[in-house]
Each structure stands twice: as C-alpha cells, then as structure tokens.
Length: 172
Image (cartoon, rainbow, N blue to C red; front, side, top):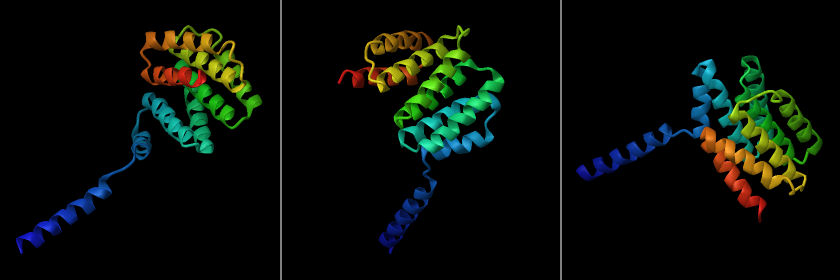
C-alpha cells in the first residue's frame, strides 16, 4: 500500500512539474508584457535573436522592427544599432543583399555622429557581416577586430561571443 502511494506521489509530482517548465522565449515574452520602457529594448533584442537563430526570419524581423521604432523615439544609439544590425543580418541570411546593404547604410547614417563605443561595435560587426555575406574577405578581419576592441571595452559578452565565433567561421 505504501509503495503504491509512493509511486502515485512520484507520478503526480512529475506530471505537475512538466507544466511548470516554460521556455526561455516564453519567459522573455512574459517579461516583455510587464517590463518598464527602459528594459523593453533589451528584451526585444533577445527575442529577435532567438527567432533569427531558429530561422523564423519573419518574426525576428517583426521584433527587430519593433525594437527599432521603440529605440528611435528614445534616441538610444546602442539599441538602434542592435536593431539595424539584426535587420541587416536577417536580410543577408536570406540572401537579400540589396536590402541588407540598405539597412547597413541606414545604420551608418544614424551613427555618423555617435561616439558611443557599444553602438560603434555593432556598426563594425554589421559591416563585417556584410563583407562576409558578399564574399569580400579583404576588410572582414579588420572590421571584426575593430568591433572586438570596442566590445571588449564595453564588456558586451553577447557580442564578444558572436565575434569570436564569426572569426572562427570566416576562417574555415
């Protein structure tokens, strides 16, 4: 009898714990609903990155566009550069090279007077990615190294990981 109760208890615990597990994406979407304005940009960027990695480019583009609109109002160079970089990479991954270049040019015009190191590191990353997509390896390493230097100064670990893996992939 005790054994049957023990087995039943374990089954019930396993069944209820399965409902408690939610994905990282779900938790970010829940957090976005209640987040204050200053935190929404970073959450939108993470959500867009998840969709981009999953190759759900339509949703990634939607989230990045929402990020861009939100951060242009606040004039946040860093998050605007993240949004443009994400949009450019999405287009380049889909081999829409003209649109990717156009978004990259928009990023340059927006950041033409910026001195924010974090924003400039994303600018150089977007330039490096564009060169990679267009098979122009001449400037690729130089642009990636510029971005690496700024990302190290700002301690942007997300971008640092991207840049190191990008350097590795581009040398294969």
